Image (tube, rainbow, N blue to C red; front, side, top):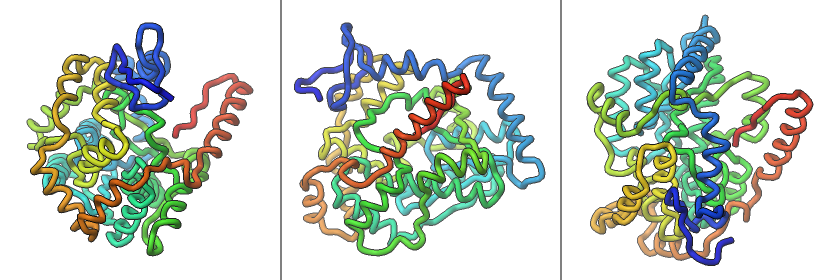
Amino acid sequence: MNSEYKICSRCVMDTSDPEITFDENGVCNHCLGFDTITRPTWFPNEEGKERWAKTVEQIKVAGRGHEYDCILGLSGGVDSSYLAIKVHEWGLRPLVVHVDAGWNSELAVANIEAVVKHCKYDLHTHVVDWEEMRDLHLAYLRAGIANQDVPQDHIFFASLYHFATKNGIRYILSGGNISTESIFPKSWHGSAMDAINLKAIHKKFGERPLRNYRTIGFFDCYIWYPFIKKMRTVRPLNYMPYDKAKALDELERTVGYKPYARKHGESLFTKLFQNYYLPNKFGYDKRRPHFSSLIVSGQMSREEAEKKLSEPLYDPDELEIDISYFCKKLRISREKFEELMNAPVHHYTDFPNWTGRYRFLKRVQSIVARMLGRNIKVYS
């Protein structure tokens, strides 16, 4: 734990990550980890192009005889939208799924429609039971933990796996990428897939049963889907020189995509959560890991990042509008909102979770890898 403030000399990660460490040159462990662990798995070059071409052929072969050969979640954000138009260019036949958890902005809906129309995709929208989602959101707010986005993120990924299984699809395409998301402090929150944690928080703080909200458990994530169903999650953007600014420009030119004022502006909940809840309640500014990712991948200078960090997270008038909408949507008073904001904070590990199981699985993975003489990865 850090007792005094310090910031990395290379990126803009600082001691808001309580587990950050620095070398003798003031470079943080996130940058060092990127150089030694992450960069070797990133292929924004000709090698990546060749690797991805082979994967595309594998996807097409696995999908023969099926209506779809892969599944793609489309949120309306830049990453998933750009991936959607690339998938079209590669000649793949994706089952395109959008999960409506109740917080879509009007602009997000318009962007999704523009992408789907351009690519001539059939869009399958899963609308989450709002009363259950509302109850889960309130349970997480009462728990006072940092990762308030779990209710949305978990149902998004769970829906993709359920849709994939139902349609006999083995490949899930993810817009997650090293270029813009390589750095994130693990200390800030746990896995969005941790159904044990989700159910424990809801059991303690929820007020109604989750009959329609579908989850996937530890066995599903690490045994059933990858080894029994032989499903793979692949991240195509890691096999090309993905530049978010250039991707946005291409989306604007080809499909009439409209940019959001902020990162994750496609979700009204995520906007308030990242730009108000986290900084004010926990001191976490998610711009720091985002900008740091862009710095180490060569898309932003440290000086530019520092300049952007000096800008306010919210316009005061816009903040009031968003808080008012948030309270109305969740049917709580402004007083209750302030009470939740000022309540004691907790860490996700204050509640039952699957971290112990995951660590055990990693140990088994390490033993098996040594026995087989090869590298086997288990992703969190």
